Image (cartoon, rainbow, N blue to C red; front, side, top):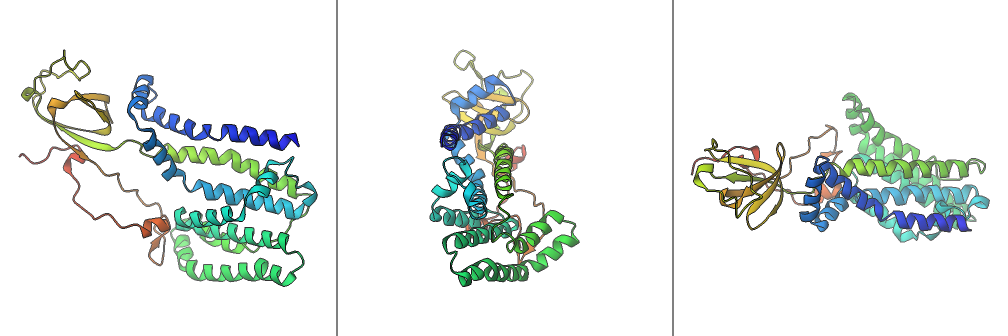
Length: 349
């Protein structure tokens, strides 16, 4: 009895620390492992901005965790009911306390936020959950069990292969084996795990897979979040150094102006903050730069560079690397990029 409760208490204690650890690691990476730069970022970077970036980048993880552990817990309960003890097993405890509306919400959220190539996997997990739940709640209704466990997965597989068949063929022709497997395997696998497995293997299999997912998922989440921008990228156009007299007494933090620098320049980097005297930019080449506000001629916010597609496969015109949200949200109008975002000076005024 104490085992599951103690494990749950430790989990609830450590779980809030994981996002904080990700945020600290992201700032540490952004500062290029320099403690002074990191402390500067901590001072000026908005916590709300960091949390927003974390939420947007990792929103896909919630459906994956809920559905994966939901399937494993219900498989354990159906296959080895004598080993399903919510007081001793954390997996059993989570399964017993997770209401059905949470699973339904996780499926809906996954349908919106997962890329198209992962939607067959979402379909497979949803069908497994429905079949295992039906077998547990209605063991005395064989017709209902047959419809949910056999007929529905077969019908879903036929519809899935009808829609995804051309894309699977294109993926094989382009040697995109991972994409082809993600589109082809889950619809067929949805028919396999709709009932119990041998009771002697269920505890080892379910708990082993749960531990594996719990060990690998944080690493994947960290790798994804460490690539997410958390500061706005801006191009700051500076006036010629000779046109502005920098006062070191009133602006001791400003960069010293070289005597031989006479022309204007464009500083491209992450905009940290703007103080009364300086515009602080995390330059991609030189690190943190304190630009005197007297030299700042203009600033422009540079849009994030478009991600280069990995796959050329589409499903009826829908790229497999895009989500439903990508299609639902309005497209940003295409405009000519500002030359300052390329580090070049604009045309002479």
